[in-house]
Image (cartoon, rainbow, N blue to C red; front, top):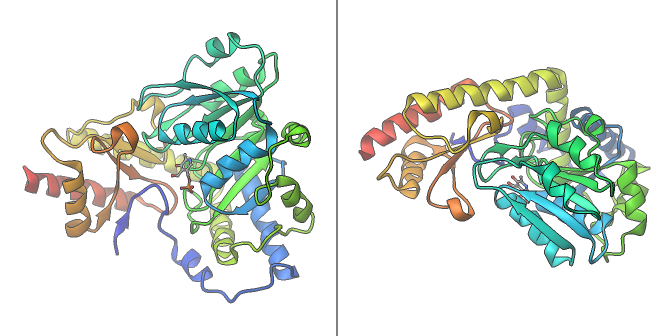
Length: 359
Ligand SMILES: Cc1ncc(COP(=O)(O)O)c(C=O)c1O
């Protein structure tokens, strides 16, 4: 079996895998409603929120679009603090829908900074958007510092956070940080199969929703709210994916969130130290390093595509390449969800052997 170390879909635990093979049920019946409710409770535990969470049958990008079309109106002034391709993507969605976007970009491999300074130069901001874990570079933005700065701004903007690739494996308490809209996706640290985006919404964001004039249908959260009263979704949900998510959440909850978060930090630190021992250069400084994904440079003279092909074909190790400006320059190794230290040892060992071969 391949060692799948891309940042989603992540491997599935055997119990999660077998849960996918259950027979279909009516999504308008009691059995479904029970599963739906259990999933919401499990997600609320990891989101650390009492807010409602909506399950969209779609990937994480749909969650990003949902956040734009439900809480704003064309021409609203918003700020995106971005530090890589997923931040760029979200800002682009905002532009395409007609928001007045100020995008503050940070160099690839570094995190968002100077939030206070930037916001102090602006007087009317409807929303501030931040990618919690920039998967294209492996940077974790420190929402514990940033959130209260955003919330203290005089124009009371909404704070919207993409934690598609960190939530479930990383501490991000929605309610105590005052995050208004928080998005994740099933195929990442949640260690379920791909197909479900989750969107949590604060009471303040709901107020804004009432005034939003963007046209929308499939992603209209009013519909999701109405159906969530019955623990249902407005349209047919991806029932099999939800089977897997219920099982993985059950296992994660049994382990306990503190242990799960700590495990991710330990695996990150272990992997980074092993990479340093190999003499390979990491893209991100220790202080901003993601607990779920690590980017590194191939040694000089080694073609990253060729290296990844050798790793895949000879060592059954599948890792990701760079994105955007970093395409061809870095490789990325995910360590989220169902993973042990042994999997990372195999990565390190395969790196050692393949690079020796290529030198
Ligand atoms: C931070 C981040 N945001 C958004 C997305 C988009 O998610 P999806 O591919 O599920 O649409 C990803 C996917 O890797 C991501 O890592």
